Image 1 (cartoon, rainbow, N blue to C red):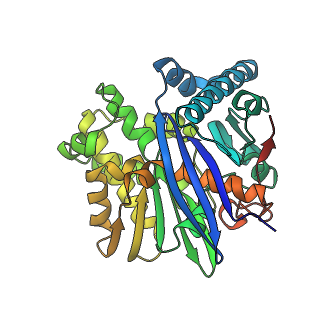
Image 2 (tube, rainbow, N blue to C red; image 1 turned 45 degrees about the vertical axis):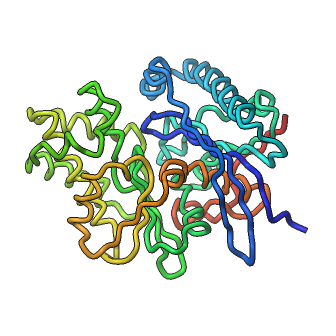
Length: 355
C-alpha cells in the first residue's frame, strides 16, 4: 500500500540571492487531495562572498563551475544538517532540494543547478531528492516552471497563482490543462537598484513610489521580444544581465525613476499575462511584501481579487512545493507537467541519492 503521510524538508535557493529557504513540511494525501502543514522554517542568508560568487558564476569557466559546485554542495549540506539538528528533526522521509540555478539555457539543451552532487546525501545523512530540472530539458522542455503542479495540488482554490520572486511566474487551469510560464524579472532588477542605494531591498516599494515613470524606458521594456513569445517560456539571470539592465542604464534618470518605471513594467506585464481579468489571485514570494507593486498590479487588474497568504506560505511556498515534488518522485508519480515546460511528455523528475 502506498504511504499517505510524509515528513520532509523542502530546500530552495532563488535567483534573487536572498538566501537558502528551508521548510520542514508534513504532507498528507486524503480522499485524493493533498494537504500540507509548514512546521519549522528558516531563511539562511548568504555571506557577501557567496552572493558575489553566485552573481558572477554566469561568466565562470567549466573548471571554475566544477569547484563552485563542490563548494556549494558542501555549504548546502552543512546548512541542511544544521537545520535538522537545530530543530531535532527525526524520521524524515527525504530532503527535497532544488539547488541554485547558475545557467539556464533550455534553448541550448542545458541547465545547471549547483548543490546537487551525490555526496550531499552523505553530508546530510538523509535521503536526498534533487536536480529536478535537467531531465525536463533533456526531454525538450524549458526545465521551468516546476511549481505549477504544486499550485494544482495544493492551491486549487485560486484561479491564479502568481509568484513574485527573482522573476515572476504564473499558473492557472485552462481546459483542464495547467498553464504556466515566467512573466518578467522582478526582484532580480528591483534588488539590484536597491543595492545601489545600499539597501537589501526597496521596503514596501517606498523608493519606487517616490519616483516618476520614464515613458521612453517603459515603452522599450514592454517591447522586448520575450513578452510577445507564446508559452511555454522561462527566464534566467542572463536575460537580466545582458538585456534588461543595459537597457535601463542607457536612460540617464534617477534611481527612484528606474525603480518606479520597472514596477510599472512588472504590473503591466502581469496584467497582460492573465487571460481572464477577474477571479482570485494568490500572490506569494518576496514581491508580495512590496505594497506599491501590488497597488500597481491592482490598478491594471481592477476586477481581480489579490490574496496574500500567511507569512510562512509567502516566504516558503517554493520550498514547500519542492518538498511535494520530492514526495511525488518517491511515489514514482508525475511531478513535471509537459503543458507548462513544453517537454515531450509529463514525467517524474529528480535524482535520488542515498547516504
